[in-house]
Image (cartoon, rainbow, N blue to C red; front, top):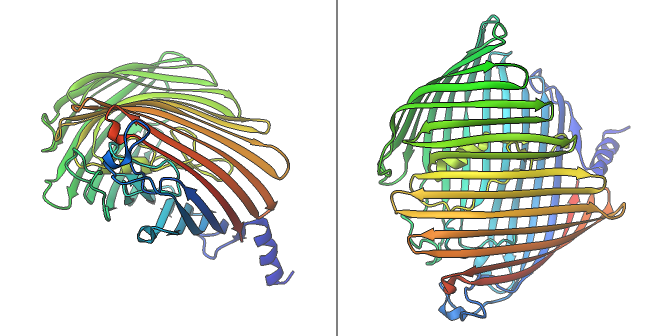
Length: 505
């Protein structure tokens, strides 16, 4: 077959695959370019506040609700590569959004999720790189749209990247070591922010640069009943503007005593110091934990620990139950001290790819979403508590996901506390050989202190997709978003509908 015919056949399949030259790149590389054209109608383009209880003119956004049409043209490319020495998975899109009436809102939007690993010296020297570009929520107190087509001023264009070398060394079967140096950078572009965005916060998170050095030595194959590990980490973050830099250092030793194949005892002791001027109390001193790991069967794993850390005591846990080969339940609870920039950097470490080539969050098994945090991108260091339960799976022609979560963020610099509890449900079904449908429902309630305000948020969507051909889809989706607040000026409702055509080349 001539080259032109081969490329045409590959394009018809939606994938261009090739073996790239060089030992490092040799392997399978799939490039999937596409273009999506969509038209969206929204009845509240600027999310003017107010509802039947409160006139829009009295709301923070001011003015009356205005409808508009939004045209979007979005070229995109997905790369899935697995070579001898290089693995790369990335999704990138560039969208041009054009408003029929409010043309001052016209903009370009970038979106990227990518992860790469290069093996420079076989089994010894690696170079890791991760990156995301996303529109992060600026302030949870301000109004926002749940429709992906109508991202309002309450969003901050954010780029998060981290990269660095990683060294592995094996002392025979006695011990293994891993040494890493990671350079991280978070860029924020607030653009023109509505006056309602920065309500009580100390401002949007500034650009930051983080340098982290870590070392781990763990037991090798010689140890089967008593497993051990020693680790150190030193991380320093510098911020643009007047905020002073922060630093976190810790060293710890951990032991695992395997009683039998079902029960293990866990314990650890160490030292930490966090230097951050935005904290009322800066943790410094002894840290320790004690707990157990239970594996009653091949499908079940659960770990629970009692912790003394961050100048507080708390119980953390994580567990997984594999119900079927395609259905899994996971639960977790953790506490931490972090900035929004550190959260974004941490999330990069959990980018993964499932068996279908979809980029996922390895903590949940769900599609990776860098904007999933319910909290805004406000400046300052916070004490954060997170509980989450996820059920994901598929059965026959149905796919489903259920998440329940509870989070709390306390920011010393502003004396603000945000507590949220909620859940979301998604369901999809293949209706015919050419048609599929989806339903999504999301509810969460956020309580703000000290203003003693509570917002109840609900959103729902229903979608239908018709496969025109193996490489072209026509979709229609309807969104409904509503916020009811004890401060009635922040009530808001939006209805939108989007029709889109996606073509894969």
